[in-house]
Structure formats: structure tokens, C-alpha cells
Image 1: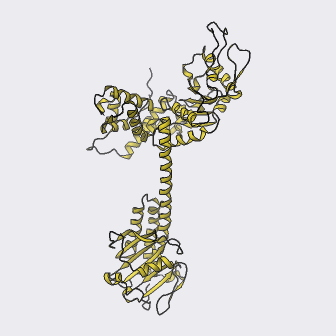
Image 2: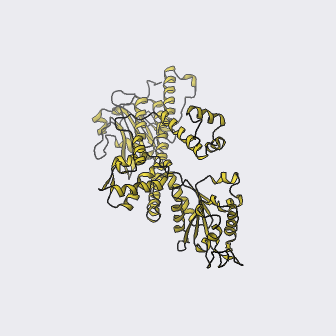
Image 3: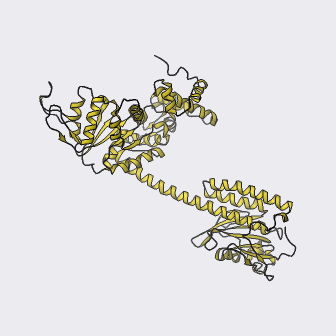
Length: 543
């Protein structure tokens, strides 16, 4: 409630109680949030306080969820106008010793950033950390001579610092040029609370933007370095995480296992680790374990001496000896037979191999990097892969997600392959949209093959949608909405994605329901409910 004998102008120090800057010397305790006697609050003031408290609660969520500073400033100023009955409002911050307007409502700002505010008033707020409440600025000696007060007929004014009063980051201002006594002490308290929230939100968002800028710069540096040297191209968060982990494990000597579907680029990651390590001058020997027969695997891996078997007409150094001083990359490690798994365990653990027919072991210095496109943990659990070998190779683990789960990488990869395979050529927009919409079951390898195919059949300098492989062009173009099409609802998109994920799990497990349930981490009841809902009860089809 406003008392009739209140003075025209008062100054509240946000650091505590301060004597009013008027002849009457009235003291204002602006930091006291509530009256001493709650029963003394009138119903009208109670309703007003409740409305403001509800708005402040709602506003807090909006402020701390804002992604851009301009939107944050707009919400703060908008709340001051809506809840305080201000004719004009403004938020300004201190930058380089100047007061810079960030958002204004009905306050004219010149192109040079000049504001029609009393410099006496803003100086006291910023220099002394004072929160100002003036009931009639035209009658207040301190402000009545201000050109802006006179020019705009300003009557009621409030202004408070943002942040620590001893070192504010700016100010929040509101005025009314129609009514005297348009604001009271409770209004000032609300403005101070609003400024407090605003300061925290501004600080959080500024730090977030700064951290993002640093992370982006670091990511771009990594992308340039890895992209140029190792062909690790992409901008997705998942690939950036793989980049960073590869960089860290490269400095160690421990074994590494790389997991990912066929074609995601596991060997590229392995080569990147080798090139970033102190073994970069040594050999990198890639071996696809799936291509080694049971009869020749031992000889190819560990070597043999002349005469050790019928066709052994000379000594042969196996892959371990060939990789001495460098890296041996064993792809599809889970295809190794149980007998070879035992030999691998000993060779990795002891750093010694015994060629077939040899009487003595040969010492080697080899870092082993392995890879697989199957669930290695499940292979161990179900007894198809030795647990002791698993623990030996699974020291550092890098997972490379499939391309469909990192769609942000499709476009940069496409440009990278095109530049490498056909310098000077470019993509039609429709072709790029189709590639970004395609599911890429063959991952990066399929993308590279598709672009290589396009560069062979394309007569001109532009790769068009029709130049892409037929399956890709059909599926990709079907997935790209035309401008006249309305986008599907979020509910439909979620259901479509969920159905496809369950279908893939069934396909991956060969229709084994229990394994699919474990893979999807679903309850049995929910899994069978989804099978009925998506008509997947007979999937995958037999035969």
C-alpha cells in the first residue's frame, strides 16, 4: 500500500538499508522481502504478490532454458513491462567501460547506442550499486534538471544494478511518463528479484556460449587434423567422441578393440591410432581374420620354417613378425577358431611367437588393435569367444556408431569422397537430400561406393539424383518431403523409428526373441506388445 506522506524520491542501496536521498531523510530497506506482519497485507496486494510470484517462477524456467542472449534479454524486459505497468523498460550491460543497450521497450536508441537516460541516475546505479525508486523525477532535485527527464516527461522511475552491486554487469530500468507514484517499494523489490534472476541466467548462458565456442574450435582443429591425415571426416557428436578417444589411446601401448558394424570405418580409426602413436614409423599390418582358413591361420599369423609341412619350401615370417615395432590390426577377431584364440592370447600376453616347426620362440614388439562387427560381450557370455582373450584385448574400447545414427556426417563424407574421386565435380541439392535421408545399411563403405559409381556414370560436373544407385535414389527421394508436403507428426515419426529399431534387432539376432529383448533392453511384456502393434510377429520371414 502507498502511504500519502511518502517523499517524491528515494534511493535504496541494494547492499542494505540506506538513508533516502531527499530532504526528509527517510530510510528505505529495499532488501527486506516481506512486511513484518503478514496480516497487514491487503487482499489487492496479496493478489498482486501472488501473480508476480507465479510469473517469476514461470519466468525462471524460461530464462534458464533460453539458448540465445537476445531472447533472454527480451523476456526480462517483457516481464518488467507486463508486471510493473512500465511505459518503458530497458536492459543494458557494461562493455568496455560503456553502457550498451541489449533490449528496450519503447526506449529510443540511436544507431550509436545512445540512450535517453539520466546519466546522473545510471551513474549512481553503476558506480554506487544503488537501486533507485523515484515517484516524480520532475520534482526530484537530483534528476529534475536531466535533459532526458525533461524531454520525455518522465515521472516515475525505477532502476537497479545487475549482479554484484560493488561491480555490476549492467542495469535494469523501468519508467512511466504518465503517472506519478506509478511504482512503490514492492515494485522495486520485484525489479531487484528480476535483475537477480537475469544476472544468473546471463552468466550461465555466456559461459555456455564460451564453452561451446572453445569446444567447436577444438573440434574443428581435430576434424582438420584427422580429416587431412587419416580421412576421419564428420561433424557428429558421436564421431567427435571417437576422434578424441582415438587421440587419447594412441599415446598408450595398451591393446584397443574397435566395435562397429561392417563398413563404418574401423580400419580407418585403427590407422589413425597408429599414425598418432610413437609407433607411426613402424609397420601397420591389417589382417582380416575372417579370410584365414583353419588350415593356414597358424602359419599366416605366427609363420613357419622350411619343411614344417608339405608346401613349406622356405621360411615364412607371420603377421606378428611382419608387424614388429608397429601395429597388428586383427579385424573380425571373433571369427578366430578356439585353437587360434589360445595362440593369440599367448602371443599378445608374452610378446613371443613360435613359428610352425620352429624349436624356439621369436620375440616380437607388437601393439595389437582388434575389431569386430558383432556384440563381443555377448560372444563371451555365450562361450563363443574366450573370456581370457577378451580381457586381454578389451583394455581400451572405441565404438563407431553406424552412419544412420550420425546423419550429420553424411554430407561432409559425401563431399570428401567426391573431392577425392572426382575433383571439380559437385552435388545437385536433391542428390544430397536423398543421401542424407537414406538409411545406409552398408555404412561409410556403401556411401563411398555409391559416390564412386556416380562419378563413373556422370558425364558432366554435377552429380544428380538420377546418377546415384537406383536403390539409394528411390529410398532417399521417397524419404525427402517436397515443399508442398506437410511434415509428419512427431508421434508418427517416433512409431516409425521404433518399429524399424525393433525390426533391426530381430534381424540382427536371427529372430531370437530373448536375445532381441536383451538387446533392446525392454520388458518381455512391452516387447510382445510392440510385436503385435507393429505386425512383426512373424519377422524375420523363414526361408
